[in-house]
Image (cartoon, rainbow, N blue to C red; front, side, top):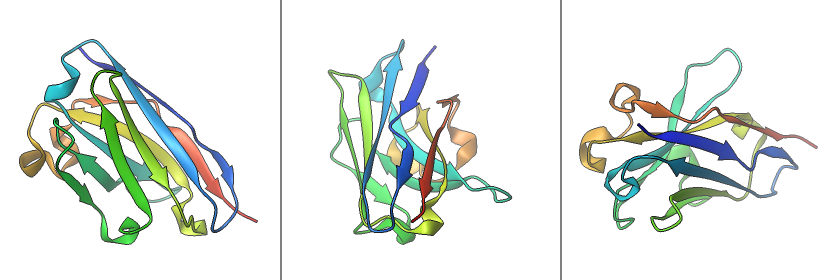
Length: 126
């Protein structure tokens, strides 16, 4: 059983930056694909970025490419999402999730992620 705790959300101005963290307990962290999803009010949860167990492979949604960076430290059982050049449309609750499947199999499919963090609110506003 894996427990995930998200943190790092808050209020940022357009063009600003935030860094989200997700720390795991239980399980064998380095075998999991770790992924960030987000959900804005009235919208479905959507894929943001994913990283494979070794940290060498990543996958990004088109709308965050060049702005967000996902990384992980398996010794610390932590995954981060560095968010730069934030836009108002990035406002959402951000969730980290863990999958037993490798990155190429888990990808953006919510149904392949059995473990979820509680979510952290990101608000981008002037």
